[in-house]
Image (spheres, rainbow, N blue to C red):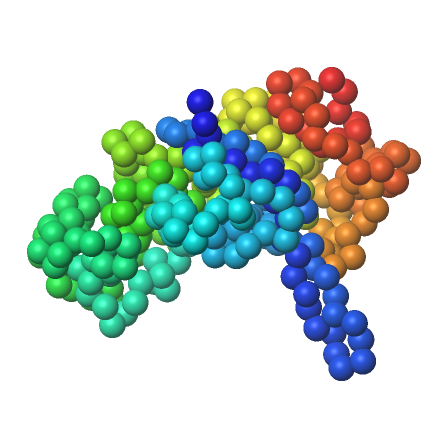
Length: 320
């Protein structure tokens, strides 16, 4: 079975100017990330701010081109596709952004915002576009009378529903969700997450769910990929990651997640120092300057991602 989305060693570098008499610096925002995602599954991408999560989201949605590696959508390599094929593939993968206040045009009615993707990407006439926009509004729980209203008339949760409707109006196969509930109240988050779960089943979608909130990830993900400084350090099933994390960075992230039970006892792992700069990443393992398990080899050799204890782990200290 062909995966809906596959990444092979995706990397992204940015050139940053450092003054008139200095050579530009190279920022390694993403340093070779690989995964495979099937229809009906949700891959959560987690990590600290600056780890490369949003860069990965931009590469997956074809907003930016990778500096290295390959991206396959339904088995077709985007880099070597014809312009017509790339145009078709762009319809198959859509994005829901973090901020529902900034992702909608304040001068555009909700109906126009939902019809615009259909106008650009299909041959539908005006009546059909209106009917399709009304139908998708119903799917996400929005009333028909909202069709002629503007974004400022809605709450944050309603705006995110509008953004989700806009993303699925073209009936894509893959949704990339970049922190889709982090700007919402806790009571509204559950509603939006349940909506996303229902839409995935109804439309047969695959999700890439970018988040730093591990409690949300635990609720929605099937697989989890942990990124640190642009590297995938641990990838596995949700249960494997949350019940038996192996990489020391993953364990530190999980130990910082709040729990509702005040009597629960668990180890709190405090990482020292700040993440290294992506302009000058450390040699060897990128996590070694902060790792409590570091030894000499970690400072010299970069660990490959290997199957250990039922998941992919890039760590010399983790035994098979």
